[in-house]
Structures are given as structure tokens and as C-alpha cells.
Image 1 (cartoon, rainbow, N blue to C red):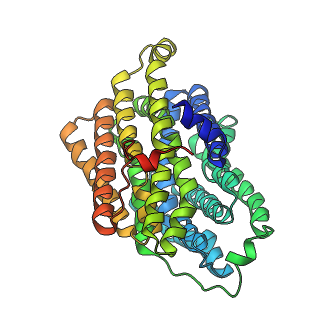
Image 2 (cartoon, rainbow, N blue to C red):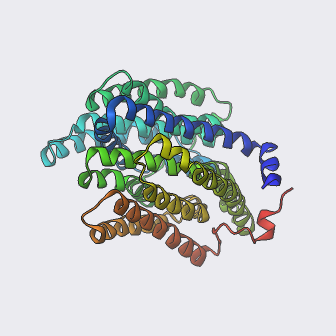
Length: 410
């Protein structure tokens, strides 16, 4: 473990890990501050609307962030009109149509502000993908994973009503995105990937489905579980979910760092390099994740002092589900960046259906049942995708320390 830590500190991934750690800790701090400021009831109501906005962002985005990352990362490049359409044009048009339909079907929810937040969240993700393709890994990570929560936290600490908080969040995030356009336009590598002599880009149905189902799976226990649990219960559950997500910190770093090598290896049709890129991402994800899980377990007595009614079984179940995701860390990256998006979409669909089936088993749903259903769903998704990628491509994305070549330090 010490050898691995020394290795990371002397590699660019060490910086990425530090940036990601700061973002995750900051996001957790924002959520806890909002829970204290708004109360668990108010926080629960806000977090359900926030979850709906995140799901809507991927539905309205037509897979834009993944398309941009794949097309710009493999050297194909894109025409500026195609980039603008994916970033803002298509999402705004879709939001207008969806707003009219949703207000007729489900008029009790503030859909206008939910969709406004969705458009700005999608814009931030698209700009982050462009910056990642241009080589600005840390700035792209901060924009995608940090900016939305910063905007939400700032709005929540000033306002109190959920709809007003979301309006302020959409406005603040929009301003941040405008500021991020400059680094994209004046980046020295921009003409090589975004220019008028590059081809346009059609919508990729498999990547869109992958993104929608991925966000649906990530938020299903909040958005759907929030319909069965009380606002206070879903508020506590959301905080525990965020704590468990701390263990997945290295997973996000592995995804960001390995995306370029995976795309390049696939473009070169180099299977050995593709397997090596997958192994590198697995190495980045697994060992630090296990260490973070151990720290969470050691911190349980402290957490119980701070929250006497802490539902420890719920946290343990969520941690177990996160560890399974770490073990299969690279399956999603390999599938979505190598033209196998249909496999990723199928696995995520199986996960969503698995959650719905588990909820029926655990009815009447309580926080522990919700956690069990979610952990089973994400584990099913990860396991199926590993199996399908292995069979279709011959790439083993399972993180295994016993694979000596993949874990040798240099």
C-alpha cells in the first residue's frame, strides 16, 4: 500500500486524486451544511427535486457529454455547430417540449425550474468533456463534479424554499459555464479538435441510452425511494449515500485518467494497449477505495457520537455496494469509449429493473430495504457489464490484484 501511495504522489494521477478528493469532500460538506440549514424535512424535499433535475439533464442531453468525450478524444474532432447543438441547442428545445408535457401529466412538481437546472447541468458536463479532450483534466473535473454543487450550496445557504433554491442554482451554474467557455475557445489545442473542417456528429442512441440509464440508476433510490420514505428518512438516506460515495472517489479519478488511453487504444485497434489501459484504471480505483472503506468503518464510532440515531446497517449496505462497483471499475469506461455503448445501456437497464424488482420484494419500503435494493441493482449492473465486455471484446475489466503485470509498480 505504501509503495502504491508513493507511486501516485509521483504521477499526474496523484494530482487528479487530490483534486477529486477535494471535490468529493466539498460536496459532502455542502450537503451536510444544507441539511443543517434547511432541516432534514426541507433537505429531503430539495434532494428529491435535485435528483429529478440530474436525471432530466441526461434525458435532455442526448448523450452529449459522452459523444463529445468519445469523438474529441479519439482524434475525429467535430464541427462547431455540432458542438453547440449538443451543448445547448438540442437540450433547450427538448426542455421546452418536455416542460409542456410534464406540466400536464404531473402538475404538482415545479418542472420549469427542474428543467432549467437540467439544461445548465448538462451544459457543464458537455464543457467538461470538451476540456477533458483538450487535456485539461483537473479543470474539467472541477467543472462537472464541483460547479453544480457549489451553485446549489450557495443558493441553499441564502434561500429556504426548494424551488427558489433551484432557480438560483440554475442562474449561478449558468454564469460558471459562461466563464468556462473562455478556456475552451482560447485553448491552444481547440483548432485541432473543434473547427469548421471537421465533420458534424449525429446523435448516438446507445451513448444517450447509456447516459440516461446511468443517471437513472444513480438517482433511482432517491427519486423513487423518496416517494415511499418520509422527507426526513430520505434526507438521512441521501447523506449516508454521499458518505458511501466517498469510497468511490478513486473510481471517478480512474475514469477521467484512463479515458484518453482507452480511446486511443481503441482507435489504433490495439487490444493489448486497451487491456493495459483498463488495468491501469483498475489499479487506480481498487486499492485506494479499499483503504477509504476501511477508514469509513473505523470512523463509525465517531459518526454515532455525532448522529446518535445513525442507521449503521444502511451505511454498511451502501458501502458494500460501492466496493462491488470498485471491483468492476473499468467496465463502463471500456464499453462506452469503444463502441460498445449498447452493452453499457443494457447493463444499466438491468440494474434499474433489478432495483424495481427488489423494491417490490422489500415492500413496505424502509431505508434499509431501499439500500439493499440499490446495492443489488448496482452490483447486477457491474457484474453483467464485466461479463458482456469480456465475452464480446476479450477485455477483462475486473480489478484483480493477483494479475501481476497490471499491479507492478514502476
